Length: 245
Ligand SMILES: NC(=O)c1ccc[n+]([C@@H]2O[C@H](COP(=O)([O-])OP(=O)(O)OC[C@H]3O[C@@H](n4cnc5c(N)ncnc54)[C@H](OP(=O)(O)O)[C@@H]3O)[C@@H](O)[C@H]2O)c1
Image 1 (cartoon, protein in one colour):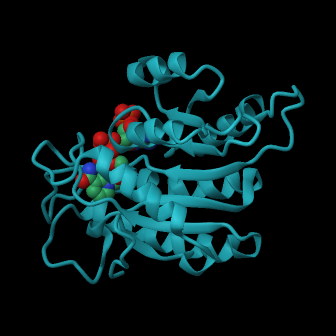
Image 2 (cartoon, rainbow, N blue to C red):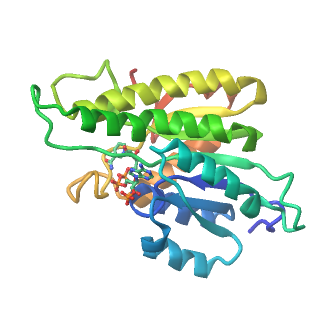
């Protein structure tokens, strides 16, 4: 296990359950210092237990990705948790940002799609991760990585039915945000990826889904680890294979 001064620093959004919680567990297991964020830290029981098990290596901060004001509050708190232990809180940067938080409003029908649902999906799944990455850019290490949890449902090429429109539109927008962020951060060597985890057994995916969250998170962390500058802006599945836009 790396020492605290050499360990990588990762930030995960929507870390209180599902894939986000699994990312946190596995990042801790590989020795990272982790900033886990979620909307209601006080109610994030599994995360609070992990904080107790990893003193000083896991920090829990509030973040609503859909609310830019909440991004600003997170950034105000960051120096307190990114410090390198010397007390000045400076110098340390994030090696990995996992834009994991997402929402899927099910049951939408053509003719009945509500503006609120579409707005919420866009704010949570697309503009939220885009604006958060932009706000965190000064805190990202040169050569760092940004992983955006996308979905095959955001693939325009793969669309064969009118299903989950708000989610699909927002994930397609996230894919464009990924391509744009990759260009914006290229000169700093920061790799930005859109990743499809597969159909995963979480509250969103349901218990009948194909992949365990442990396996999906492990596979995605391997893809992130292997990715280099040539992969930046790509849309990949958990095996590292390209997805159709
Ligand atoms: N599961 C799948 O089959 C699948 C497939 C493709 C892509 N994905 C993507 O993978 C990511 C994780 O999905 P999951 O399956 O773990 O979903 P999940 O079990 O429904 O968990 C979603 C997480 O996102 C958080 N979240 C939602 N809105 C938020 C907001 N405004 N601010 C902060 N956090 C917010 C939730 O927090 P609260 O507890 O506060 O609601 C929760 O922690 C998502 O981006 C999803 O679209 C999942």
